[in-house]
Picture 1: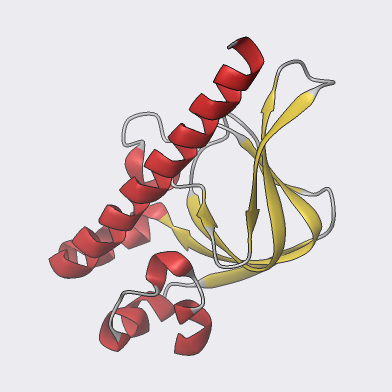
Picture 2 (picture 1 turned 180 degrees about the vertical axis):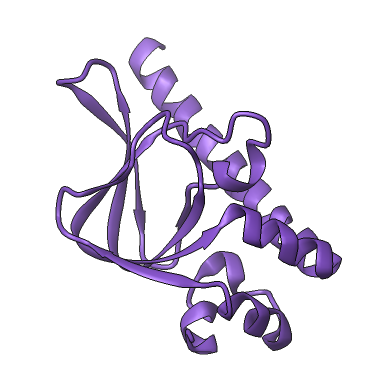
Amino acid sequence: MVELDDLKSIILLSHLTDPMLEKLSDITLTAEYSDGDYIFRDGDYARYLYAIVDGKVGLELEKTTNAPVMMDTISRGRTFGFSALVDTEQKKYTTSARAIGDTRLFSWEGTELEMLFYQDYEMGFLFMKRIAKIAKTRLQIRNVQFLDIYG
């Protein structure tokens, strides 16, 4: 079982109550990746939502198979892979995620999170409100990058 203080270090989860975090702890998995390991690739089935405990993750788009473009770097306490929760029809990741240095992650299976949110609507609302904020921020970053390239 994951400690509540470890879950509280994740920005997405920092606003949840201890009882909510205890429920989440029961379905939290941990994984470790080495520098350069892919966590998932663009187009893979989006099964998990991830949060970085230690290390960094680069989010990439592949212009060609030989030339991935780094779109964003996600660091400790941040979350990625939210297609596991918001892409209800396709459930596909929209970028590739690769470890930058040795990286330790928490992960949650999207279907388990959804079941938890049906049981605790308040938790689901607070969680998804933060997911929406992350999506908005990442879209703003991509818009700026797009303007830098083509503006």
